[in-house]
Length: 194
Image 1 (cartoon, rainbow, N blue to C red):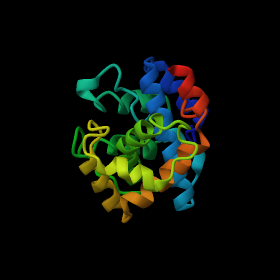
Image 2 (cartoon, one colour):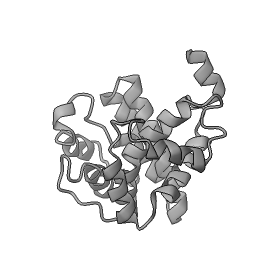
Image 3 (cartoon, rainbow, N blue to C red):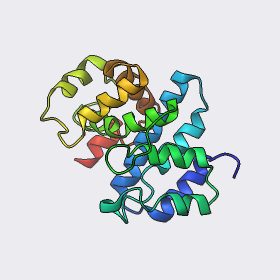
């Protein structure tokens, strides 16, 4: 495979991931990655595809995350640069692959950040549709909100990117708004769940 496409990434991910919340997380990360690609003037679909595949082995091996990723993806023909990007999002947690490119640094940063944005959007009457950066930053500063999301790690990623949390969050919110329906973050989707 010359380049990882979204369709290819979804097929591969669906072969390993069955839990709906993990598939949704992959789509949230992909939406953020697409927006980060736009920011850096890179290939949006390619970055989104990498975002979809980033937790390929997590459902089957949560305690050994990323230890069972390289070989199956390599066997499927996923390009080495994409495999390296996926491996780098576990830097300092479960891999020693340091994020070096803008794509790698972005994936490292938005993985956890997308979770806080999703949680904040779910609390709003209109979902993510009318979310502004100001209201998101209030949630960000509240340590008890989406407490499982690793804020120090997100800030470390922002530092690697040479960007501040507000700027990265704004880009990610924009990306997630573009995919609000698919991410179940519209007012209709949220009120249908109640």
